[in-house]
Length: 83
Figure 1 (cartoon, helix red, strand yellow):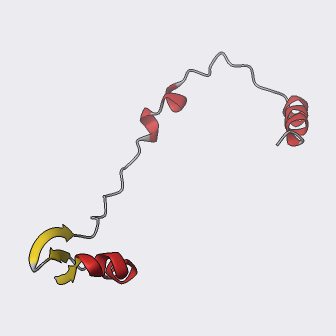
Figure 2 (cartoon, rainbow, N blue to C red):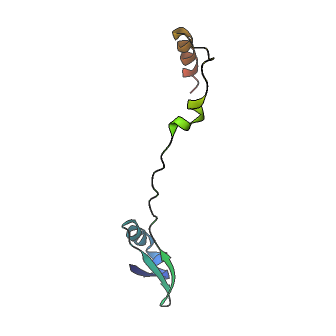
């Protein structure tokens, strides 16, 4: 754990940020008294996605019309100039 003054925080914040980035905890003092604590952000565990529960996957496509190769090509060609 490191200690820094309010003046250090104001004048040397990039150094303090590098300490925090390295995992250090910093106590901020004012007139010798601790007033704040800066701690590194904890990594959040990655959330797992259940794709099988997705509405797009569950959608019933049995009655959807399948496009022909020409229709698909025409749609792609038509949209290619708009982006």
